[in-house]
Image 1 (cartoon, each protein chain N blue to C red):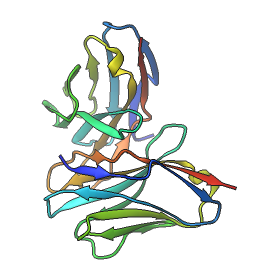
Image 2: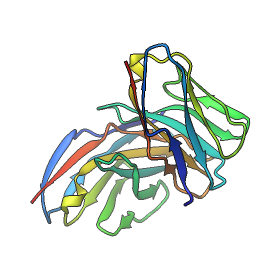
Image 3: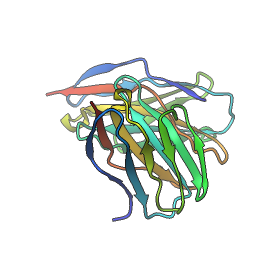
Length: 111
Length: 115
């Protein structure tokens, strides 16, 4: 089925560990983005990409890295996880004239 | 960045009644788009309705309608004939016009429908 696929769905990390949240879309969307959702704060933009090879920071980029080597994939890397990064993460994609498609989310807990 | 304000953290509504969720926004752009999303307890983000800033008619999608008041920078969601399945978190979001696709979200409103 066409859409945005996020993996894993759940993850528990220890403080200081690193991991990569995967995001893939098969709709040929140029624009991809990562959000984090925290209680009472809605979704906040972490990083985004307007096409392969192009990334930029959003509202809350600290502690996260991204890359976009292909149109389909937009992984989010946590280099040294902190408890403050405990959150639900969403990947979304779109293109001109289309709506936004969201992944099903990744619930991350950092202990 | 655009600012989206949802002032109602939580609301209760009786089944079959209508409910209005408030959303105000702050932007200096002339062209922009407004979205409403539903997030049930399962966690996925479900698109409900879209309003473009130049659309003259208020958007409607089934039981959802958007009360767009451009001069007041207001984009309230109206859910008519509430159903138990409408119990969820609802988010208002805005994107700028042109080639800027960054979405800004409000804090959300939790709606609980009572039987």
